[in-house]
Image (cartoon, rainbow, N blue to C red; front, side, top):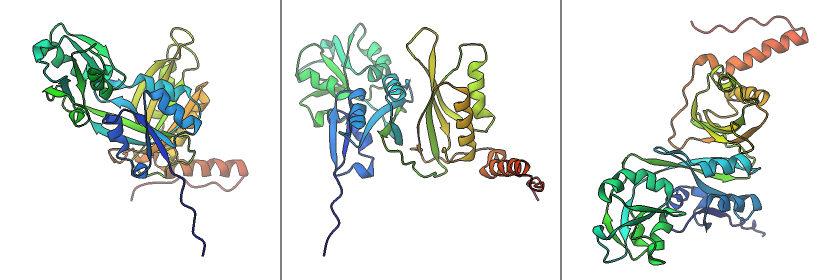
Length: 324
């Protein structure tokens, strides 16, 4: 009696080392449990793992509730072909100030921190350590690990559980300026299989304006507003070939298999010289998307049936009338 072959092991890349918020986001992925996790040094390396096939998927931070979009992640998704977002995950963010054992608060003159973390703790640091200098680190954990590798910094902004991994002392807890800060992470792969619509979905894309003229951005936005599609994120990023040229990172409420979203995407494709579809996937918060009934699937289907009847010479189709 033959048995089915065991499934191939999967590998997942994340911004390391261990203890980062990115690792905490990956821990939320059911299918990643028990698989190989690859710790990498930056977003580009994580996504390159996916493109090359070294990893099945990569977890990257894409947006923070305080600082907005993570530009390096947005730029990479915009320019690296073949990538798709297949899920999103939320991690509540908090930080502590750690030092080498024996260091006192009055000894701290230089603080190591990831730039996003530093921005979220800047107020506390300016009040508590006026005149301090900042050394950027590649990750929150690396900021702390660096204290044991060199003496460039006196302290580091790090995740609360950092002392579980490194022989450091905590000088201060809860140093983040906004205790409600949340970071949004996305799981990225090369899979072309669309997650099924759940009613609580998000669609991400990148679009460029055809020309730099008055009203061009408004025309892009109208592709969504005239279909009743809300945008939960709209951020511009320079294309880089000349001044004044931008691409727009867009998150739209709904799934590309929703008629209103599909029609909006067709409008964007007709309007923009370059559109990158980044994926449709379930929202991390599970909040169902609300929309005006005038933009329900049946309305778009009815309109297509009406047009098809005209073109094919079929008898007129009576209009659909809602209500009692």
